[in-house]
View 1 (cartoon, each protein chain N blue to C red):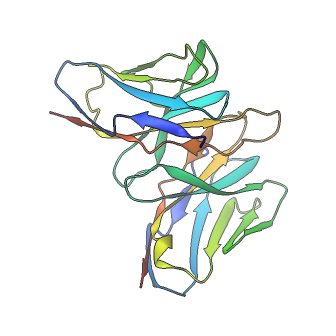
View 2: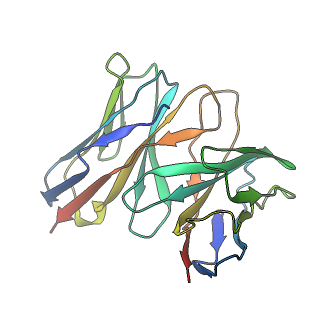
View 3: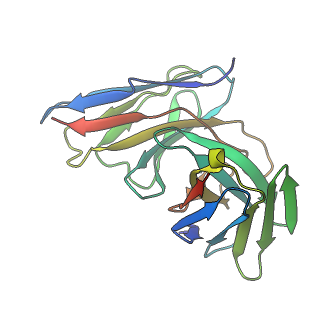
Length: 115
Length: 111
């Protein structure tokens, strides 16, 4: 079955540590996205990528980094510069067309906490 | 920001009743989407309505869009306990790829 796989489901970070969240999709989608969700809040866009080896900052990119070396993979690194990393992180993907936005397909998230 | 805002923040109903959630946004859009999120899971796309459409149906879901009022509503008819989830609206505008999500409505359907 096609879909998006995020791992791990739960992750703990120590002070001063960088951690990487994995996101893999087999939907053959060109665009991929990372969102952060805080309790009772909507989704805020961290980074997005429309094509391999290219990505753009979203609304809250500070303290995060990404790479897009393969179409299927879009890992997110939460760096030590992100002082409040505790949140639920969601990865999504979509096709790209010349028309209006297409629906986004989501993984089941990674919950990151500070030790 | 084009961020949508859902209303109410929380809604509790009995099974079999209809549930209506509203979404307001601030700037012009080219489409509006509704998503569902079960607790601890990712979002699932429900329905997309384009800016030139006024109403759309999908099974027990009915979505309306009023671009003059910059608002949309999602109606779930004959609700079931399995409909218990958070519902988010998301607006798309100038960029073909970016969506802006609201804070969601938490719907609880009591059996």
